[in-house]
Amino acid sequence: MKRLWAPWRMKYVEYVTIEKKRSCFLCEAARSQVSKESLVIFKDENWFVMLNLYPYNTGHLLVAPYRHVATLDDLTEEELRDLGQVLQKAVKLVKLTYNPDGFNIGLNLGRVAGAGLEDHLHFHIVPRWNGDTNFMPILANTKVIPEAIYDTYERLAKKLKELNLT
Image 1 (cartoon, one colour):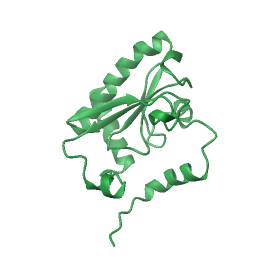
Image 2 (image 1 turned 180 degrees about the vertical axis):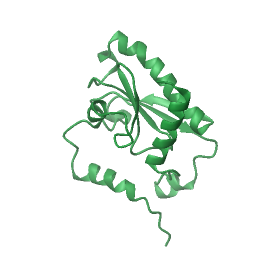
Image 3 (image 1 turned 90 degrees about the vertical axis):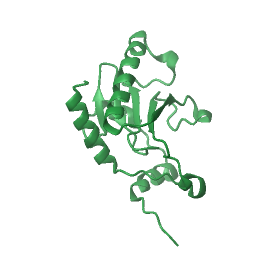
Image 4 (image 1 turned 30 degrees about the horizontal axis):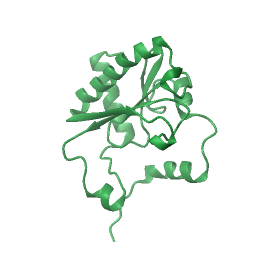
């Protein structure tokens, strides 16, 4: 029998199976500093960008407003205007760091749409490469992430500084 070791997934398993956290992890990230520990890569006036702790692919980012709002209707005009610029910066950062062949960008509104956190709106930016889908998700329901999360953070932070995007 072959084994695939993914010890970083235990935090997710414990989170899902024991109980939901009482506090919102996005609100915690919004209050934190830009740092490897918080996984927050950059902030602007109304939005922040962080690495997804349980990514679909290397470089999977979350873009969220500071305010704890659940729907697009809850966003202010200023937040909506800023959103485009923040998404553009985040995509540019990942593109210039990892050179993906494409992106999936979107949000899941409501549990039935796949939202793991329904109450705090957030967008996913998932870089995609030709051939990034293989047999593992199909046969083993397992996604292989080829880079450690903190290595991803360091690469993105270095490129962010080089590009002076913030």
